[in-house]
Image 1 (cartoon, rainbow, N blue to C red):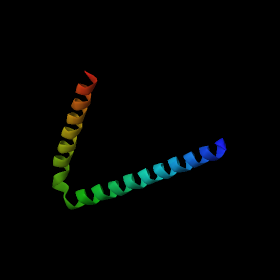
Image 2: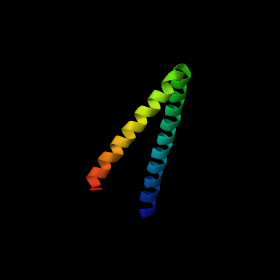
Image 3: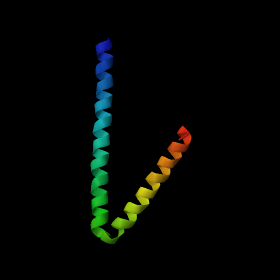
Length: 66
């Protein structure tokens, strides 16, 4: 019985990882398409993302007491 449960768990994990990979591939295509249509926006978007990542990191550091 433990083997069946383990197999089911592995199947769920494999399905989840497969779905995540598909989402990642789709987002890569979406961003590529966006930047091909809006090449001048690439630097602006990069700065915005970096700013959000820095802000998120600062929030996490504050919660950790750093």
